[in-house]
Amino acid sequence: MAGRRPRVKTAYHHGNLRNDLVTAAVEIIRKSGPDALTLRVVAQRLGVSQTAPYRHFASKEALLTAVAAEGFTSLLTSIHRALDAVGADPIVRLQTIGKSYIRFALAWPAHFAVMYGPRPTEFSVGAVAEAGRAAFSLLTELVVACQSAGTLRAGNPTRMGVQIWGIMHGLATLYLHGLLPRSLSEAELEALGEEIVAFLRPLPHI
Amino acid sequence: MAGRRPRVKTAYHHGNLRNDLVTAAVEIIRKSGPDALTLRVVAQRLGVSQTAPYRHFASKEALLTAVAAEGFTSLLTSIHRALDAVGADPIVRLQTIGKSYIRFALAWPAHFAVMYGPRPTEFSVGAVAEAGRAAFSLLTELVVACQSAGTLRAGNPTRMGVQIWGIMHGLATLYLHGLLPRSLSEAELEALGEEIVAFLRPLPHI
DNA sequence: ACCTGAACACCGTTCAAGT
DNA sequence: ACCTGAACACCGTTCAAGT
Image (cartoon, rainbow over all chains, first blue to last red; front, top):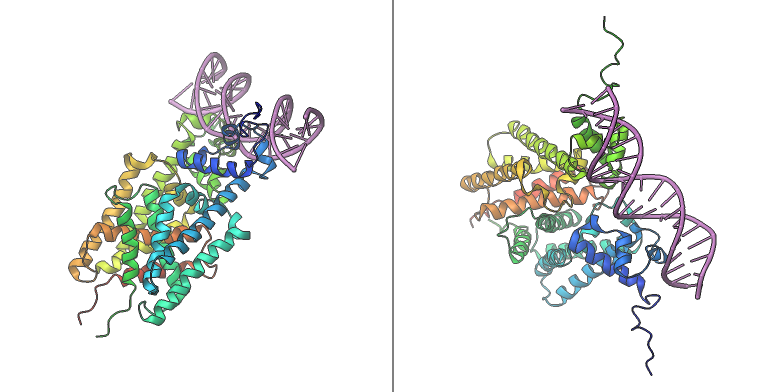
Protein backbone atom coordinates (compact mmCIF):
# COMPACT_ATOMS: atom_id res chain seq x y z
CA MET A 1 0.00 0.00 0.00
CA ALA A 2 2.87 2.34 0.63
CA GLY A 3 3.92 2.37 -3.00
CA ARG A 4 7.52 2.65 -4.04
CA ARG A 5 8.00 6.36 -3.93
CA PRO A 6 11.13 7.06 -1.92
CA ARG A 7 10.87 8.13 1.66
CA VAL A 8 9.97 11.84 1.09
CA LYS A 9 13.54 13.03 1.27
CA THR A 10 15.03 11.67 -1.93
CA ALA A 11 12.08 12.99 -3.91
CA TYR A 12 12.17 15.66 -6.59
CA HIS A 13 12.27 18.35 -4.02
CA HIS A 14 12.80 18.83 -0.43
CA GLY A 15 9.85 20.16 1.42
CA ASN A 16 11.94 22.28 3.66
CA LEU A 17 14.92 23.27 1.61
CA ARG A 18 15.23 26.74 3.11
CA ASN A 19 15.70 25.40 6.60
CA ASP A 20 18.00 22.61 5.48
CA LEU A 21 20.19 25.10 3.66
CA VAL A 22 20.74 27.05 6.87
CA THR A 23 21.46 23.90 8.85
CA ALA A 24 23.89 22.56 6.29
CA ALA A 25 25.64 25.93 6.06
CA VAL A 26 26.14 25.98 9.81
CA GLU A 27 27.47 22.45 9.72
CA ILE A 28 30.02 23.28 7.01
CA ILE A 29 31.20 26.43 8.76
CA ARG A 30 31.57 24.57 12.02
CA LYS A 31 33.62 21.81 10.46
CA SER A 32 35.71 23.76 7.97
CA GLY A 33 35.44 27.47 8.71
CA PRO A 34 33.50 30.28 7.07
CA ASP A 35 35.65 30.35 3.93
CA ALA A 36 34.85 26.74 3.16
CA LEU A 37 31.18 27.53 2.73
CA THR A 38 30.09 27.60 -0.90
CA LEU A 39 26.56 27.55 -2.18
CA ARG A 40 27.45 24.81 -4.62
CA VAL A 41 28.73 22.51 -1.91
CA VAL A 42 25.78 23.14 0.35
CA ALA A 43 23.42 22.37 -2.55
CA GLN A 44 25.33 19.24 -3.43
CA ARG A 45 25.18 18.00 0.14
CA LEU A 46 21.39 18.35 0.09
CA GLY A 47 21.11 16.64 -3.26
CA VAL A 48 19.68 19.59 -5.15
CA SER A 49 21.06 21.48 -8.10
CA GLN A 50 23.51 24.28 -7.57
CA THR A 51 20.92 26.89 -8.43
CA ALA A 52 18.20 25.60 -6.13
CA PRO A 53 19.36 27.77 -3.18
CA TYR A 54 18.45 30.84 -5.21
CA ARG A 55 14.80 29.92 -4.85
CA HIS A 56 15.18 30.67 -1.15
CA PHE A 57 18.04 33.13 -0.82
CA ALA A 58 18.89 36.01 -3.12
CA SER A 59 22.60 35.47 -2.59
CA LYS A 60 25.19 33.70 -0.51
CA GLU A 61 25.22 36.78 1.68
CA ALA A 62 21.50 36.35 2.31
CA LEU A 63 22.06 32.77 3.46
CA LEU A 64 24.72 33.96 5.88
CA THR A 65 22.38 36.63 7.15
CA ALA A 66 19.83 33.91 7.87
CA VAL A 67 22.47 32.03 9.85
CA ALA A 68 23.23 35.17 11.82
CA ALA A 69 19.56 35.82 12.46
CA GLU A 70 19.11 32.30 13.79
CA GLY A 71 22.15 32.90 15.97
CA PHE A 72 20.87 36.12 17.49
CA THR A 73 17.50 34.58 18.24
CA SER A 74 19.19 31.60 19.80
CA LEU A 75 21.53 33.77 21.87
CA LEU A 76 18.62 35.76 23.21
CA THR A 77 16.75 32.57 24.09
CA SER A 78 19.80 31.16 25.88
CA ILE A 79 20.16 34.32 27.92
CA HIS A 80 16.52 34.39 28.92
CA ARG A 81 16.55 30.74 29.87
CA ALA A 82 19.65 31.26 31.99
CA LEU A 83 18.13 34.30 33.66
CA ASP A 84 15.02 32.30 34.53
CA ALA A 85 17.22 29.91 36.47
CA VAL A 86 18.79 32.49 38.77
CA GLY A 87 17.45 34.77 41.48
CA ALA A 88 16.55 38.44 41.39
CA ASP A 89 19.91 39.84 42.50
CA PRO A 90 20.82 42.08 39.56
CA ILE A 91 24.57 41.56 39.87
CA VAL A 92 24.08 37.81 39.62
CA ARG A 93 21.80 38.32 36.63
CA LEU A 94 24.44 40.51 35.02
CA GLN A 95 27.06 37.84 35.50
CA THR A 96 24.63 35.28 34.15
CA ILE A 97 24.25 37.26 30.93
CA GLY A 98 28.01 37.37 30.55
CA LYS A 99 28.40 33.67 31.15
CA SER A 100 25.57 32.90 28.73
CA TYR A 101 27.27 34.98 26.06
CA ILE A 102 30.54 33.12 26.44
CA ARG A 103 28.79 29.78 26.66
CA PHE A 104 26.81 30.49 23.51
CA ALA A 105 29.93 31.51 21.59
CA LEU A 106 31.69 28.29 22.52
CA ALA A 107 28.67 26.07 21.94
CA TRP A 108 27.76 27.59 18.54
CA PRO A 109 31.03 28.85 17.12
CA ALA A 110 29.75 28.83 13.55
CA HIS A 111 26.81 31.06 14.36
CA PHE A 112 29.01 33.28 16.48
CA ALA A 113 31.59 33.66 13.70
CA VAL A 114 28.93 34.70 11.21
CA MET A 115 27.18 37.00 13.68
CA TYR A 116 30.34 38.87 14.57
CA GLY A 117 32.51 38.14 11.59
CA PRO A 118 33.57 40.64 8.97
CA ARG A 119 30.22 41.40 7.32
CA PRO A 120 30.45 45.04 6.22
CA THR A 121 27.10 46.48 7.28
CA GLU A 122 24.36 44.01 6.43
CA PHE A 123 23.17 43.67 10.01
CA SER A 124 22.44 47.31 10.68
CA VAL A 125 18.86 46.84 9.57
CA GLY A 126 15.95 44.52 10.18
CA ALA A 127 15.25 41.84 12.70
CA VAL A 128 18.90 40.96 13.17
CA ALA A 129 19.83 44.41 14.42
CA GLU A 130 16.71 44.29 16.55
CA ALA A 131 17.85 41.18 18.41
CA GLY A 132 21.27 42.70 19.01
CA ARG A 133 19.75 45.84 20.45
CA ALA A 134 17.40 43.80 22.63
CA ALA A 135 20.31 41.93 24.17
CA PHE A 136 22.23 45.12 24.82
CA SER A 137 19.16 46.75 26.39
CA LEU A 138 18.82 43.84 28.77
CA LEU A 139 22.42 44.43 29.76
CA THR A 140 22.12 48.17 30.41
CA GLU A 141 18.86 47.72 32.33
CA LEU A 142 20.63 45.33 34.67
CA VAL A 143 23.50 47.78 35.05
CA VAL A 144 21.02 50.43 36.15
CA ALA A 145 19.39 47.99 38.56
CA CYS A 146 22.77 47.10 40.05
CA GLN A 147 23.67 50.72 40.47
CA SER A 148 20.37 51.37 42.26
CA ALA A 149 21.01 48.39 44.48
CA GLY A 150 24.49 49.70 45.21
CA THR A 151 26.23 46.62 43.83
CA LEU A 152 27.83 48.36 40.85
CA ARG A 153 29.78 51.60 40.61
CA ALA A 154 28.01 54.75 39.49
CA GLY A 155 28.53 55.96 35.95
CA ASN A 156 26.91 56.07 32.54
CA PRO A 157 25.11 52.72 32.11
CA THR A 158 25.74 52.59 28.39
CA ARG A 159 29.46 53.04 28.96
CA MET A 160 29.46 50.30 31.56
CA GLY A 161 27.36 48.09 29.31
CA VAL A 162 29.88 48.49 26.51
CA GLN A 163 32.68 47.60 28.89
CA ILE A 164 30.97 44.42 30.05
CA TRP A 165 30.01 43.41 26.52
CA GLY A 166 33.56 44.11 25.40
CA ILE A 167 34.98 41.85 28.07
CA MET A 168 32.74 38.91 27.25
CA HIS A 169 33.16 39.39 23.53
CA GLY A 170 36.92 39.69 23.75
CA LEU A 171 37.34 36.63 25.94
CA ALA A 172 35.08 34.53 23.72
CA THR A 173 36.75 35.71 20.51
CA LEU A 174 40.30 35.15 21.69
CA TYR A 175 39.35 31.73 22.98
CA LEU A 176 37.66 30.69 19.74
CA HIS A 177 40.69 31.84 17.76
CA GLY A 178 42.84 29.58 19.90
CA LEU A 179 44.92 32.46 21.21
CA LEU A 180 44.51 31.75 24.89
CA PRO A 181 46.57 29.25 26.88
CA ARG A 182 45.34 25.77 26.17
CA SER A 183 45.11 25.16 29.88
CA LEU A 184 42.10 27.47 30.09
CA SER A 185 38.90 25.47 30.36
CA GLU A 186 35.54 26.81 29.30
CA ALA A 187 34.49 27.02 32.94
CA GLU A 188 37.56 29.08 33.77
CA LEU A 189 36.88 31.39 30.86
CA GLU A 190 33.40 32.04 32.18
CA ALA A 191 34.89 32.62 35.62
CA LEU A 192 37.24 35.25 34.18
CA GLY A 193 34.28 37.21 32.85
CA GLU A 194 32.29 36.77 36.04
CA GLU A 195 35.22 37.97 38.10
CA ILE A 196 35.64 41.20 36.18
CA VAL A 197 31.99 42.08 36.73
CA ALA A 198 32.63 41.52 40.44
CA PHE A 199 35.53 44.00 40.18
CA LEU A 200 33.05 46.63 39.03
CA ARG A 201 31.37 46.68 42.43
CA PRO A 202 31.60 49.98 44.27
CA LEU A 203 34.55 50.70 46.50
CA PRO A 204 33.76 50.25 50.20
CA HIS A 205 33.50 53.46 52.17
CA ILE A 206 36.60 54.13 54.19
CA MET B 1 74.56 58.25 -21.42
CA ALA B 2 71.58 57.18 -19.35
CA GLY B 3 70.12 55.18 -22.20
CA ARG B 4 66.41 54.95 -22.77
CA ARG B 5 65.59 52.24 -20.30
CA PRO B 6 62.42 53.27 -18.40
CA ARG B 7 62.56 54.68 -14.92
CA VAL B 8 63.07 51.39 -13.04
CA LYS B 9 59.43 51.08 -12.10
CA THR B 10 57.73 50.64 -15.45
CA ALA B 11 60.35 48.13 -16.47
CA TYR B 12 59.91 44.44 -17.10
CA HIS B 13 59.79 43.82 -13.44
CA HIS B 14 59.35 45.58 -10.25
CA GLY B 15 62.43 45.51 -8.13
CA ASN B 16 60.46 45.13 -4.98
CA LEU B 17 57.40 43.19 -5.90
CA ARG B 18 57.22 41.25 -2.68
CA ASN B 19 56.89 44.37 -0.58
CA ASP B 20 54.51 46.03 -3.00
CA LEU B 21 52.26 42.99 -2.93
CA VAL B 22 51.89 43.27 0.83
CA THR B 23 51.23 47.01 0.66
CA ALA B 24 48.66 46.66 -2.10
CA ALA B 25 46.94 43.82 -0.26
CA VAL B 26 46.63 45.96 2.86
CA GLU B 27 45.24 48.82 0.79
CA ILE B 28 42.58 46.62 -0.81
CA ILE B 29 41.54 45.08 2.50
CA ARG B 30 41.31 48.49 4.11
CA LYS B 31 39.13 49.88 1.34
CA SER B 32 36.95 46.88 0.54
CA GLY B 33 37.29 44.28 3.29
CA PRO B 34 39.20 40.99 3.45
CA ASP B 35 36.88 39.17 1.06
CA ALA B 36 37.61 41.66 -1.71
CA LEU B 37 41.26 40.67 -1.76
CA THR B 38 42.15 38.50 -4.73
CA LEU B 39 45.62 37.75 -5.96
CA ARG B 40 44.58 38.60 -9.49
CA VAL B 41 43.41 42.08 -8.56
CA VAL B 42 46.48 42.79 -6.50
CA ALA B 43 48.69 41.71 -9.40
CA GLN B 44 46.70 43.79 -11.85
CA ARG B 45 47.01 46.87 -9.68
CA LEU B 46 50.79 46.48 -9.70
CA GLY B 47 50.89 45.92 -13.43
CA VAL B 48 52.26 42.39 -13.30
CA SER B 49 50.76 39.17 -14.55
CA GLN B 50 48.36 37.24 -12.39
CA THR B 51 50.92 34.57 -11.72
CA ALA B 52 53.76 36.89 -10.71
CA PRO B 53 52.78 36.84 -7.01
CA TYR B 54 53.62 33.15 -6.93
CA ARG B 55 57.29 34.03 -7.35
CA HIS B 56 57.10 35.56 -3.86
CA PHE B 57 54.29 33.79 -2.04
CA ALA B 58 53.34 30.16 -2.21
CA SER B 59 49.65 30.98 -1.89
CA LYS B 60 47.16 33.66 -1.11
CA GLU B 61 47.27 32.42 2.47
CA ALA B 62 51.02 33.08 2.54
CA LEU B 63 50.48 36.66 1.43
CA LEU B 64 47.94 37.15 4.21
CA THR B 65 50.38 35.66 6.69
CA ALA B 66 52.93 38.25 5.58
CA VAL B 67 50.37 40.98 6.22
CA ALA B 68 49.74 39.58 9.67
CA ALA B 69 53.46 39.35 10.41
CA GLU B 70 53.92 42.99 9.43
CA GLY B 71 50.99 43.81 11.69
CA PHE B 72 52.40 42.04 14.73
CA THR B 73 55.78 43.69 14.30
CA SER B 74 54.12 47.05 13.91
CA LEU B 75 51.92 46.51 16.96
CA LEU B 76 54.93 45.63 19.07
CA THR B 77 56.79 48.71 17.84
CA SER B 78 53.80 50.94 18.63
CA ILE B 79 53.58 49.55 22.13
CA HIS B 80 57.27 50.03 22.81
CA ARG B 81 57.23 53.56 21.46
CA ALA B 82 54.25 54.42 23.63
CA LEU B 83 55.90 52.89 26.69
CA ASP B 84 59.02 54.98 26.09
CA ALA B 85 56.88 58.09 26.36
CA VAL B 86 55.47 57.35 29.82
CA GLY B 87 56.98 57.06 33.27
CA ALA B 88 57.93 54.01 35.30
CA ASP B 89 54.64 53.56 37.16
CA PRO B 90 53.61 50.04 36.13
CA ILE B 91 49.89 50.71 36.26
CA VAL B 92 50.31 53.61 33.84
CA ARG B 93 52.44 51.41 31.62
CA LEU B 94 49.76 48.73 31.71
CA GLN B 95 47.12 51.23 30.67
CA THR B 96 49.44 52.48 27.97
CA ILE B 97 49.69 49.00 26.48
CA GLY B 98 45.93 48.76 26.42
CA LYS B 99 45.51 52.11 24.76
CA SER B 100 48.20 51.29 22.22
CA TYR B 101 46.41 48.06 21.35
CA ILE B 102 43.13 49.86 20.73
CA ARG B 103 44.84 52.68 18.88
CA PHE B 104 46.68 50.22 16.64
CA ALA B 105 43.48 48.35 15.83
CA LEU B 106 41.72 51.54 14.79
CA ALA B 107 44.68 52.95 12.89
CA TRP B 108 45.47 49.74 10.97
CA PRO B 109 42.15 47.93 10.70
CA ALA B 110 43.25 45.86 7.72
CA HIS B 111 46.25 44.45 9.54
CA PHE B 112 44.18 43.91 12.66
CA ALA B 113 41.48 42.05 10.73
CA VAL B 114 44.02 39.70 9.18
CA MET B 115 45.92 39.23 12.45
CA TYR B 116 42.84 38.27 14.40
CA GLY B 117 40.50 37.18 11.65
CA PRO B 118 39.36 33.63 11.01
CA ARG B 119 42.64 32.01 9.99
CA PRO B 120 42.37 28.40 11.20
CA THR B 121 45.79 27.79 12.75
CA GLU B 122 48.46 29.29 10.50
CA PHE B 123 49.83 31.61 13.16
CA SER B 124 50.61 29.03 15.80
CA VAL B 125 54.14 28.70 14.46
CA GLY B 126 57.03 30.86 13.48
CA ALA B 127 57.86 34.51 13.91
CA VAL B 128 54.23 35.56 13.94
CA ALA B 129 53.41 33.50 17.00
CA GLU B 130 56.63 34.78 18.53
CA ALA B 131 55.55 38.42 18.27
CA GLY B 132 52.19 37.60 19.80
CA ARG B 133 53.80 35.85 22.73
CA ALA B 134 56.24 38.74 23.22
CA ALA B 135 53.37 41.21 23.50
CA PHE B 136 51.55 39.01 25.99
CA SER B 137 54.70 38.55 28.06
CA LEU B 138 55.10 42.31 28.29
CA LEU B 139 51.58 42.44 29.62
CA THR B 140 51.95 39.79 32.29
CA GLU B 141 55.29 41.22 33.43
CA LEU B 142 53.62 44.55 34.03
CA VAL B 143 50.81 42.81 35.90
CA VAL B 144 53.37 41.28 38.23
CA ALA B 145 55.07 44.65 38.69
CA CYS B 146 51.77 46.29 39.52
CA GLN B 147 50.93 43.59 42.03
CA SER B 148 54.32 44.07 43.69
CA ALA B 149 53.74 47.82 43.79
CA GLY B 150 50.32 47.23 45.31
CA THR B 151 48.47 48.94 42.47
CA LEU B 152 46.75 45.82 41.16
CA ARG B 153 44.86 43.07 42.95
CA ALA B 154 46.61 39.85 43.78
CA GLY B 155 45.95 36.80 41.66
CA ASN B 156 47.37 34.69 38.85
CA PRO B 157 49.13 37.13 36.49
CA THR B 158 48.30 35.08 33.41
CA ARG B 159 44.62 35.11 34.31
CA MET B 160 44.70 38.84 34.81
CA GLY B 161 46.67 39.30 31.61
CA VAL B 162 44.02 37.39 29.70
CA GLN B 163 41.33 39.54 31.25
CA ILE B 164 43.05 42.78 30.26
CA TRP B 165 43.83 41.53 26.77
CA GLY B 166 40.24 40.36 26.42
CA ILE B 167 38.91 43.78 27.34
CA MET B 168 41.07 45.65 24.86
CA HIS B 169 40.46 43.11 22.15
CA GLY B 170 36.72 43.05 22.68
CA LEU B 171 36.37 46.82 22.70
CA ALA B 172 38.49 47.20 19.56
CA THR B 173 36.69 44.40 17.72
CA LEU B 174 33.19 45.59 18.53
CA TYR B 175 34.15 49.11 17.54
CA LEU B 176 35.65 48.05 14.22
CA HIS B 177 32.56 46.00 13.43
CA GLY B 178 30.47 49.12 13.95
CA LEU B 179 28.51 47.56 16.79
CA LEU B 180 29.08 50.28 19.35
CA PRO B 181 27.08 53.51 19.60
CA ARG B 182 28.24 55.89 16.91
CA SER B 183 28.62 58.55 19.57
CA LEU B 184 31.68 56.76 20.95
CA SER B 185 34.86 58.50 19.86
CA GLU B 186 38.18 56.73 19.62
CA ALA B 187 39.41 58.66 22.66
CA GLU B 188 36.40 57.53 24.67
CA LEU B 189 36.99 53.94 23.61
CA GLU B 190 40.54 54.12 24.90
CA ALA B 191 39.21 55.68 28.09
CA LEU B 192 36.84 52.73 28.56
CA GLY B 193 39.77 50.35 28.48
CA GLU B 194 41.90 52.51 30.72
CA GLU B 195 39.08 52.78 33.25
CA ILE B 196 38.64 49.04 33.58
CA VAL B 197 42.30 48.58 34.37
CA ALA B 198 41.85 51.20 37.07
CA PHE B 199 38.98 49.10 38.46
CA LEU B 200 41.43 46.25 38.93
CA ARG B 201 43.27 48.15 41.65
CA PRO B 202 43.18 46.55 45.08
CA LEU B 203 40.36 47.31 47.44
CA PRO B 204 41.34 49.84 50.10
CA HIS B 205 41.74 48.39 53.60
CA ILE B 206 38.76 49.16 55.76
C1' DA C 1 66.16 34.58 -11.30
C1' DC C 2 61.92 36.45 -12.52
C1' DC C 3 57.88 36.97 -15.26
C1' DT C 4 54.15 35.50 -18.88
C1' DG C 5 50.10 32.86 -21.14
C1' DA C 6 47.31 29.18 -21.47
C1' DA C 7 44.95 25.94 -18.96
C1' DC C 8 42.30 23.46 -15.02
C1' DA C 9 39.06 23.05 -11.54
C1' DC C 10 36.40 25.77 -8.98
C1' DC C 11 33.19 29.85 -7.57
C1' DG C 12 28.63 33.11 -7.45
C1' DT C 13 25.06 34.32 -10.26
C1' DT C 14 21.75 34.63 -14.34
C1' DC C 15 18.38 32.86 -17.34
C1' DA C 16 15.74 30.16 -20.34
C1' DA C 17 13.48 26.01 -19.75
C1' DG C 18 11.22 22.10 -17.69
C1' DT C 19 7.40 19.76 -14.26
C1' DA D 1 5.73 27.21 -7.21
C1' DC D 2 9.96 24.95 -7.39
C1' DC D 3 13.89 22.94 -9.59
C1' DT D 4 17.39 22.04 -13.58
C1' DG D 5 21.26 22.83 -17.16
C1' DA D 6 23.94 25.64 -19.70
C1' DA D 7 26.35 29.70 -19.62
C1' DC D 8 29.15 33.95 -17.99
C1' DA D 9 32.57 36.26 -15.55
C1' DC D 10 35.40 35.45 -12.03
C1' DC D 11 38.77 32.88 -8.69
C1' DG D 12 43.36 30.21 -6.93
C1' DT D 13 46.78 27.54 -8.72
C1' DT D 14 49.89 24.89 -12.03
C1' DC D 15 53.07 24.51 -15.67
C1' DA D 16 55.52 24.94 -19.81
C1' DA D 17 57.72 28.62 -21.83
C1' DG D 18 60.06 32.97 -22.53
C1' DT D 19 64.09 36.75 -21.24
